[in-house]
Image (cartoon, rainbow, N blue to C red; front, side):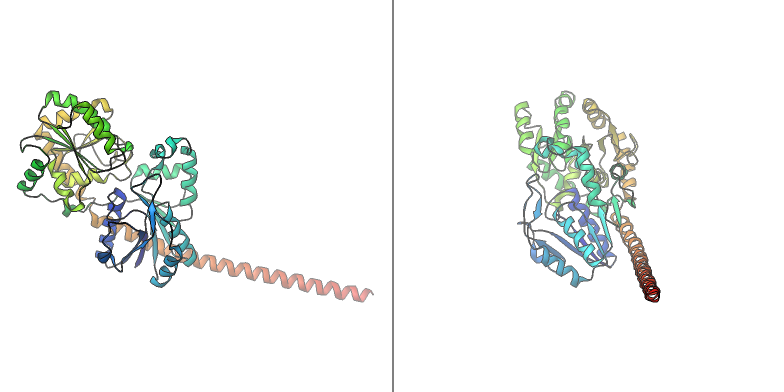
Length: 424
């Protein structure tokens, strides 16, 4: 198949969406498919390595999410290009510029179209005038309006599927979790971990609590930071390492300074994707207090790295993570410090949960993810052809019916005219 993916977010940008797309692209190529990426320009992109497979439109930072970009020109060029590539399916991954373009092109060339709904925007309203412009009901209407024209939708979790249904979308919605590239999280030499620790000012024997991902309000990283004073009372040699970047990193760093914990809470900033596996293994446990996840990729990556996961209970993980079995869960932020201390002081239990988590994540492999999506492409493609034939037949019947009506009207008119002339 010739597959076109349209996204505003792609490598070298670091996010769950970019990771999901790169994993899918890699697995589809392994299956022998041709995958073309249509995305925005990025000053850090390696254009020479992308030639022939990644096409970028001129773009600027998005006003509400400066670390994301939005296309501003070159739309017609892409429309002509797609016409030459003979795409079998269009798969969009954004509701903004490239998503709108993908929809337009799919309609123009009558190409089957699929959309993955990656982001629960109701969790992000605070970025837009502190939530004073858009309301949740408005977001639902916008979501329904954007998604309703697709042949099928992909939801990474049941939580997202339920949200789409709540928006009034009754079309085909497939729950397909993003797979994990397990090979990328194989154990690294202990010397490498010790080196990273020393570079961060951490002694080899000190325990590390790891937070990794986008540093933003909706990730609730401040809950983990607020728990650290209680943790340090019991475990004075514990460290919290926060890996990643985002709009509130400086704000959180200042908060840590105000608490006098800059030696115990360490911010690494953004880390190259090739190093992520090593940083996961830096931690004695992985923690997330977020309830805004649509994919839970960081949970699965930590589990693939054979690390125990502590996560806040949420619908996005309720069918996947079992408390004290495949992960550790907590309900309230006030319980976080106690749970962190329990895991760090019960290494045998933590190791057993880590092993169970690793076994679970094997079933969520990148290979299976690629197969699931490819099967959906095939299914939607067949359905699209049937609908196209049905519409063509319907159109033919309508034209035939109209023609017969015109003929009937014309005949009746002729008869009436004939009768009228006879009366004369």
